[in-house]
Amino acid sequence: GAGQSAAPSKQLAKSFVSDHQARRGPTLGTLLFPGPEAGSWRVLAVTPLRVEVFDAHNATAVELEADLLAALNQHAPFTACAARQEAAQDLAIGCQDGTVLILEVSAGRLMGPKLRLSRGDEDHDRAEPGAEQSLAMSITALHLSESGAIFAGTSGSLICWDLQTGDLQREFQLPGGATAGAVVAVQEEGSQNMLLWVGLDTGSLAIFEASSGMLVRSFSCSGPEAVVCLSYSHRTSAVFTLSAHKRVSIWDSTDYSCLQRYAADLMTCGTDLSSMASCSLRELDLELLLLAGVDGSLCVRRIRRREDRKMNCVLLWYMENASGDVGCPLTSLSYHAGTDSVLLGTAACQVQLVAELRSQLGNTVEMAEPKSKRTSSAADESGPGQSSNDCSESPGASTLARRGDSGSASPSDNSVVAAAAAAAVGGGSGGLPPSTSSPEFQPAAEGTEGAELPSQDGYPGDSGSGLSRDGYPGDSGDQAAFPVFSGG
Image 1 (cartoon, rainbow, N blue to C red):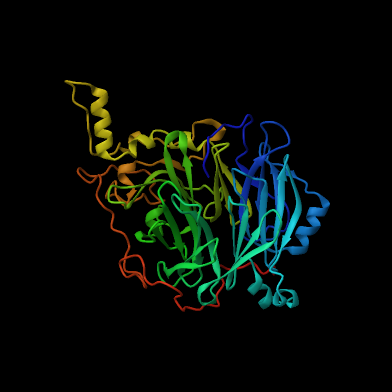
Image 2 (spheres, rainbow, N blue to C red):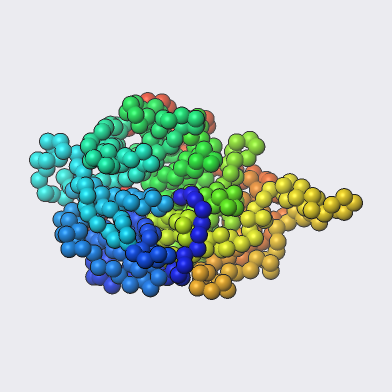
């Protein structure tokens, strides 16, 4: 998300927990939207069996309208959801029966569904209830575009509808009949043309031209394992992909070249990665990558291009127990610029809120600057005839204070501020991220700032150029892109 941040007029709650007995499966997605009163907010959570709305200030559940509940119960279980945090007029929910429900968010209320979208083909209409058929029809990925279209991934295809009329606009056939695990829209620089990047359960990426439906590229990502998450950073022109929760690969969105590959535990703090999302803090001129660990931890990295066009990913902040339940994975995350908050959905159907992200980052933004830039700034401030106190080491552990003293807006005492020089991936330091058992960061050794942390190359299908092959790869896969909740 992007936009100007503005603190809410009333304090936001930290945790939202459903007391309903149907607390099964992971949180599929969350949304923070304006409440009925000025300055008030509400939190929405989508889980496989329920859609719930909470008062964002006292964490109490808000009752849904009877017609909406009936429609939701008719199409449950749910398998995917999508919403734009900064333009929350529409919420899309993908269902296991192949339906996409479009709900309306207005004046603090969740209403609808205003549209019930489905393929409408004969195979879908004639399909009889059954676990195998139902799983094949499941909506496995959703994306709401700014152009007013919704894209839904399923087994063998990606479907596009007009969000206003509900008309079926186009169906993209996926290479080898693969299943879409994630989809993101990329606007070409200096053009009105939009490209759709689709992560497949065969381990490949397929890139389509949205207007014509033409397959532009198809290539292996990081091995044969399923692509489970995609995140696009417009400011850096990069697409981040997550394969099998274990590997992250970074792709240039303009020429499709592979910039870097890393094991997921290098991007986090020693754990596999469950989800990720990029966001912009324009007031601080920062582009961030939020990383949710399977152990319930949260990492925030600053991302930007280096002079050689590779990606620099510096760890700014780390929170060990962001899920609120030790060891409980985070399954969804999103940034809301209007309140400067991060919403975290957990595998236990709970939602955690980290408020005031900018204040959590604190002075790590300055520490994350490259050594040359910090040196130049220090020299400018020292004035003529004075020498700057340049030090190649990051601040010691004693100066990296734990954050937890800023009132209710701060996270738990498990959060720590990260020294950039000791935690840069792809340049910035040769140091590694801290382990969860020892969260205090150690200073980098003399002269290691700017050292390259070697990327994890050599995965199957990697030719070294980042483009393994063009056109349809010919791979076929019957596996779902991720375990789909069967309602059992």
